[in-house]
Image 1 (spheres, rainbow, N blue to C red):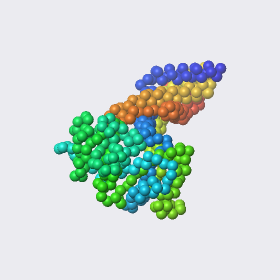
Image 2 (image 1 turned 60 degrees about the vertical axis):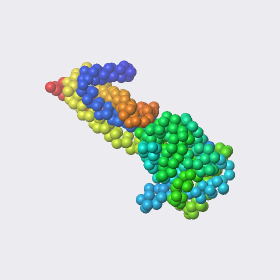
Image 3 (image 1 turned 90 degrees about the vertical axis):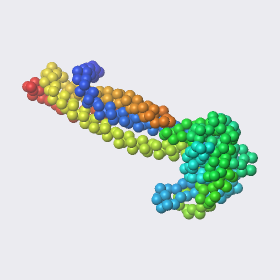
Image 4 (image 1 turned 45 degrees about the vertical axis):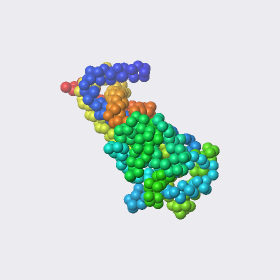
Length: 411
């Protein structure tokens, strides 16, 4: 009997929605916009998160990355923490069980400098590192070779460049043998790195890598340099132990007191990924919270239209009650109608949001493909249904509580 009543209520609710298609669509418009906004935000951020995670896959599961860390408060005070060559030397001499120690830093300009080839100039990052950089960051060459031990030991002015820098300087497709000028110093191109693509429209191939020893000579003031260090742990089961040992070594070297925050970070590739994804997750929560306001606006719209619908159908409700329809039947019918309108809006919003995320990805060069997780779909549809139910209770209760005689007399 209950199933039969539920079926009849669903049929009546859908018939009412179909009879007023335009009004039902306009009623659900707030839900459509709200769900579309949520899905577009989540899909875009999740796609970006996946790309960032992939970018750290080059760092093996047994690798550790050591870099300086300056808090926001310290930056406001004009302070800049650094890892120095002395720190690098301490790690090399004091920590056993590690290999492929790969230091790197920017000898000229923290974010880049002007490089020149012929009459063409470009603003690019210059990275000074050792031959092990190739394996540590998967910077393999598609033409020529990577830096080798002889380049490092003899201090040769050679370099490996990225595809974007090659294009900006209008160098040949195989630029090996060409010369690039940096700060008045000429560097011979010995290799062209494989392309990595773009993230958020920012090229990952606009760089040149020079030998670490040459970078030290080019830097001039070595005390101001900030070195990052990547190394492998020989036995993966000792990963956490060595991480702790490196932390203790540098805390002692930097004379940090007990309870004082580290001015550096020692992270695994997984922790690096988690650091970025945590930031993006926080951003997602904030953005979703903002755009979810439109879902509440949509819910209020549903309640208003359903109240109008109850008024329009007062006589119809009276006839149904006169023929024996129970209060539960009337309540269920109007509640299902409100939920159905909201759920239809949720489905349409889901499709619109997914399409919007693809459009955003297409308009921004190098932006990663959107990725809609199952939890986002389930959450959007559940939330839209809940909004319909929440804001449909008042109109449904008003319809169910109508007096039969008054309803039949209503004109």
